[in-house]
Length: 221
Image 1 (tube, rainbow, N blue to C red):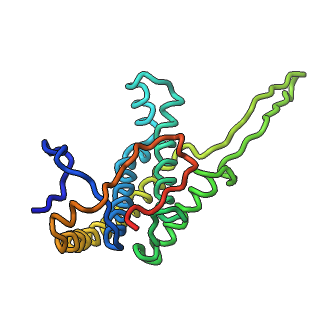
Image 2 (image 1 turned 180 degrees about the vertical axis):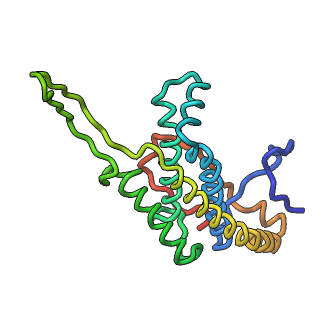
Image 3 (image 1 turned 30 degrees about the vertical axis):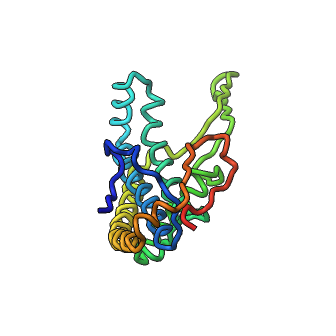
């Protein structure tokens, strides 16, 4: 009998991963990849949407200062936005927003994409600005110079918006994956165990930053 769950088994050494091609296998792998990303985004939402008091309190609990407290929700939000947008970009594994969202939801989606493209990933929006602040006294000859940075520090509503859209995608992906699960299993069961054992081995490699510039291909084509 086939088993979908490999992790946690005591007899893992008795199994060999094999190469297998096909559109259903590729879609199954790709949809699960996006599903995992959406689940991770949703899990980060409580951190990104916490208020500043909660952020400062968490930083204090961890033994860090005020800057960490301000940074915790901000950078959780940036991570959510970048990871979310990556699922719809021109990468290897992507989906089309039109397949998942209503017209109103598409407007919210485009706002998130703009936030990612013009602020989170590329510093081109006037949401963020910097200048040298020179303040001159009106009563004496004193003046003060200091660098000044204006930035979007806290946007809990945006985190909640991303979480909502991610949940919509997650729900629809789960429906499609349930169908693909049956389709993939049926296709595999058309082969005998001898035919499956005759397939070439699949060799997985651990992620390494040395390979950062190497573009990956599709896994089941």
